[in-house]
Image 1 (cartoon, rainbow, N blue to C red):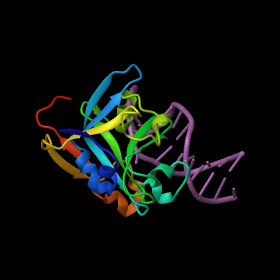
Image 2: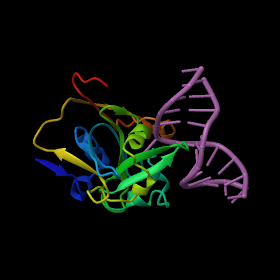
Image 3: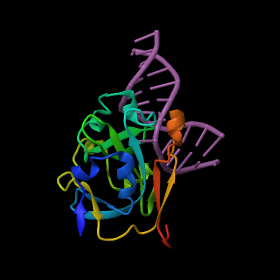
Image 4: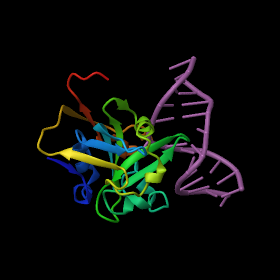
Length: 178
DNA sequence: ACGATGATGAAC
DNA sequence: TTCATCATCGTA
């Protein structure tokens, strides 16, 4: 059976949640009503106030507010003057965490995922559910379609020892063309 | 290798 | 109010 992932699923450590999102589906309902499903193949965990790579390491600010809120909400922010980044908030209230969706099948790169799915900041702080038009579904009945590789996170060299954490998770799907 | 391009947060 | 920085991407 396929479930829409809600607060209870996300209310854990981002490092625990992240690998479990591999093989799940990012589902988007576009303004015209069409629904598309995308297999999640790459994610990164940002966990706690200590994690120097996380925006939340600077504390509670207008931008990071949502990361301190309840799990299962979207954190969408703008970076490099042109890219929207899509994250799902994890962990208990007041314990900031998030998982960045870096790629879905056929779309590599976090900026490309959001562009392709028409995800912008107006989804920020929205719940991941049908009402917001963007949610995640997971089939708990079947196994992960591939092998999971762990590496350090991309673009966070400034984060000192936190940059080394193997908190990037990639799903290598068998015999698939890009 | 590097420029585009604008929000963010910290310093002043 | 200014400034460096940035969870990136396309072109070279």
